Length: 314
Picture 1 (cartoon, rainbow, N blue to C red):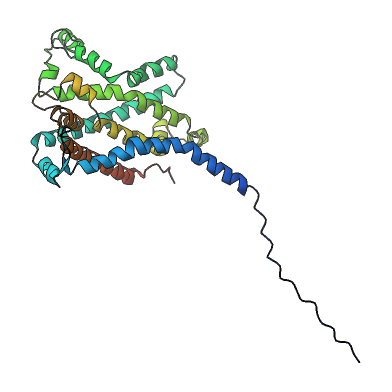
Picture 2 (cartoon, rainbow, N blue to C red; picture 1 turned 60 degrees about the vertical axis):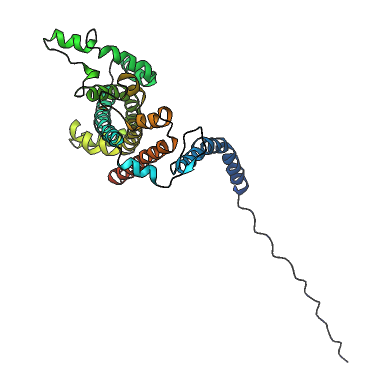
């Protein structure tokens, strides 16, 4: 009689855990550390940028004079903007100011950066001297230029008088007030642009220029074929920050001309200031601020499309 062999019941085992890839735990720690490091900056931006931005959007649909609670008025503030001749003049003045100050200052800054990138004697002194106006208080700069433009004892008319020319009343003339403000904006904005271009020039690969020299390319050809394309990210950054700075110009107008004469130098930021803190039309000022924000956003997107943004050459 043959014995029946009963097979042992197989035990089910849980599948073995896949081994943790090396470095995953370390990457998680780094991710958490990174989140902790950026948390203060994010919190700061949320409190001082995010919340005020939302508040400005909400208040732009209200009539608010600080003393009484806001009253919802819908699109009334934006409708008033369409018929506000002074604000339309401020938009035009700001556009003209930006059109002349940004490209001229960028061109001068690039030229100075190219010269200071060479082995020039005393270049450190020149770099410091050119950058000083950028770190000087705008009000102090405006006060100096207020003396320069003085029609009786100012430096500008003294130079013109030495050349046999009669100088105008710079800041009291509807013809010369805006050019005078533009000159101040160009002069003060060169330093930072020069510094950014200089840093970008010093980071360019030298082997490309050596190869171009071997191929017989002249300095002018190297500039337009190598330097300009390689500086595209820096140019995009300088342009965007310069446009934003030009649209936000306020101090020099406030000190030099107070928006006059006859609103010939009034800027968008100056009109926003007057609406908010002189007329106490906070809702209307918020609507003006949103128009300014929309214009800056559109200009930034258009420039990014035209220049390729911060992408380098392909």
